[in-house]
Image (cartoon, rainbow, N blue to C red):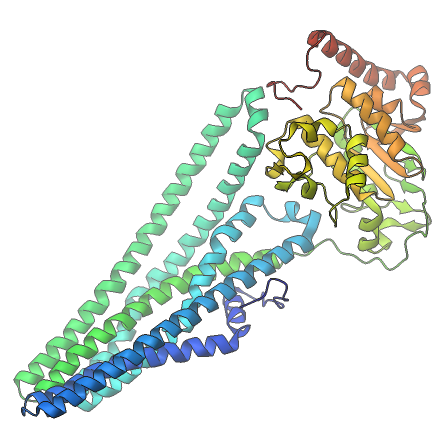
Length: 588
């Protein structure tokens, strides 16, 4: 079975069937062993009726008890060996399924990591979750065809050959029966493939909505939109349920035919054998063996129908995974070396220039405009920005990511101990963690947790308030200690007192290193070396905060509005009231 650190290989993404075949080829020894064990196991099951026929004809009918005992002993030994083979077959097929499962998971996770920031723009979160939760298991189950599937085909041929020695008509019915069953069930399995594809697509959409609802419930409560969103979710859920009923209807017919047709088909074989025995064309022992062969064939024939069902579901799941694996990250054509030391960043679309070693603030009436500038400076999308004397997109992306960090105020927080949540490549030591916590004014966040830095934080920081999450994100960015830090609204969820502390400490912590923040808070802007005022996404003015206040009416109106809001907020809280609470009263 694949090791956790083993290379899963390069998947075949030409289509769903190719991907399933690639999973088989990645474990050829185990696949061959599963097919061999499954075939021998089923053939030995078919051997029991033959031995029983010999015991009846050679021992029981003529009254030769010794011969009867000999055949009975042979049947016991053969049954014991077959029981051991069944155990080994099951173990082997379990490993085949687990290998396919883990290998697919590693391939998908590797692709998600490779896509990086491109993933949210190319695939929905619900689709990725559906792949990880459902499609991977479906593909693993489809691997059953490697063992019992091959064994069923082999034993079907063996039984047909044995019946040929008894009666040609019986053998002809067995050989022709399987194609008839395939013709009956084939259209249903193809229809199932189509309905299952639609169901999986809608399931991915609904899963994404669940994630959105869980992540935005607090905001929806505050805006009064929870009921509206819940109604939309109920509507989508009803549509998914209706689609599920359609899938279930087709699947129920497939499964019903998988049990009913083999039984009907084999009943015909039994009836023909009984007629031949009544006519004296076959012996009593041969009639008994035909009954045994019929009992043995019920499993393989039913499995052929089940196998078709599982393989069609597996192909649907594999196609979804292949679609994800076909996505390509943003092209990286960078061949020019990055500047050897700190260098100016220039973004020509907006006109923003970031002087190295200084704290620069971007202020815009529409925060999205400042965030777009940061994305271009951080090379998250097409950009004409330059870094020193070279275009940013001409530098290898790994070099850019290693030296320039974009810290989004909505960046994901993973579940785990706080110390690991803020770790960047390695677990921080106590001194580095303490410095970052102080710079982000987040010491109280640690004190509020029962186990300090070892306390577990829920995924996306759901166990923290909005302000606490924002400061934890800032701690993580500061621990990374990049050469260039581009922080988007790092203090937007903080009260004035905490925001002032963050502004003061952030400047000190990043002294001599290039830092860009987007904000309209005068507390943060006043600490910046240079403030760049953006209007419609372009530089309207730049300079120290106080000079812009005096010289730029538009900037003064933008910042003065924030100042009035902060003053009103502090007045409403009153003396002694916790300065950092969100609208629902949760302590940040």
